[in-house]
Amino acid sequence: MPSMTWYHDTANISKRHRLNDDLHCDVCVIGGGLTGISTALNCAERGMDVVLLESETIGFGASGRSGGQVVQGFAADISVIEQYVGKESGYTFFQMAREAVDDLKERTARHAPEADLRMGYLHLTLNNRQFKAMQSLCAAWHGWGYTGPKMITRSEVRDWLGSDRYFGGMIDPESGQIHPLRYLLGLAKGAEEAGAILFEDSAVRKVDGTIVQTDSGLVNAKYIVYCCNAYLGKLERKLYSKIMPVASFISVTEQLSASLAATIFPRDVAVADCNLALDYFRLTHDRRLLFGSGASYSTIVPPGLIGTMKRKIVRIFPEMANIRIDYQWGGLIGITINRIPDIGRLSNNTFYAQGFSGHGIVLTGFAGKIIAEAITANDKRLKLFEKIHHQTFPGGWLRTPALIAGMSWVKLREWLNI
Image (cartoon, rainbow, N blue to C red; front, side):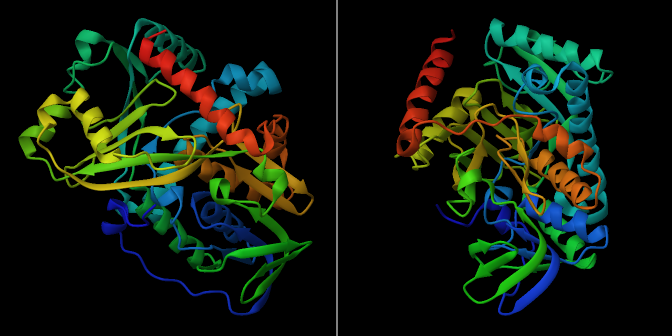
């Protein structure tokens, strides 16, 4: 997959040095995406010496390729989380997710004001079954004290989006959109200003106890934090078996006229439908449609991808039939079986966070926060995540074909509207 995206073309990127030395530190973070940078930032702010190692460049992975959708909550419903932690702690998880959005707003204002954070999110349904499920979610949020979201009917959708495709939906005023790479680079600068040292082109080849080895140097750390997510590979097999890398794809169109942009987005909101293999889209700051859709559970780029994406866009917005796609890219996200993030520790000095299952823009920042809390002797919130049992993906070397088969059935059900 190409490394260049619309994000890379619209961000101020600076190159960082490769690790060419042997260093000692308090915390060694492996991975330079949002999880790793947030962990480095939070640890450095707490007075720890931090070294971060990124195999490519900061933001090379999902954090520099995502849809930029700032979404409340988890990919799994709170009722699923309650099965592991109980009803009272389930409410705590909801509050932590709300806190994570507040943290993102504060971090953006402090470190990345250029990241184009805009609030307003439209969850759209395609049938009555999805609409009723969304009504239940909205009612649950209201019951927990978050009364901002409201339901809209089919006849009201046009007030928010220039499309007749949808059955209805929910407006969430405190979710939204952001330029994820600008946000990440702002956090990276903040981490460095707090004292963290960030290295690029420094792939970790081996972790032996407290020694983290690269091709040209090593780091001896008191604490190690794995923040590799879908790009972990087999560096740590205990973690690798708990997540599945899934490829997601995004198209960005040419710049739209002001009149067309106003027609398809009468109100400036980010949008997603409610399918498991969902469509998600938004209007960028330079008036392009950024459109993401579906996923490849084989991680292979489907043939004719640009044509497929264009057809999906036109199905929603017929007036965009003659609009050109200027950018097309893919990247890997990490999913867990239960779609709840897997955050915990492998030992007293080894922590990790992975498997955000499409909700990484917000929850990665919170993961870095609670890991930093745990390292500094307040692991109460980390222990809540450790109560959640994460199964390994079954099938060994057949796990990817098995997932493809299962997801094909889910997609067929959604297509048949059952």
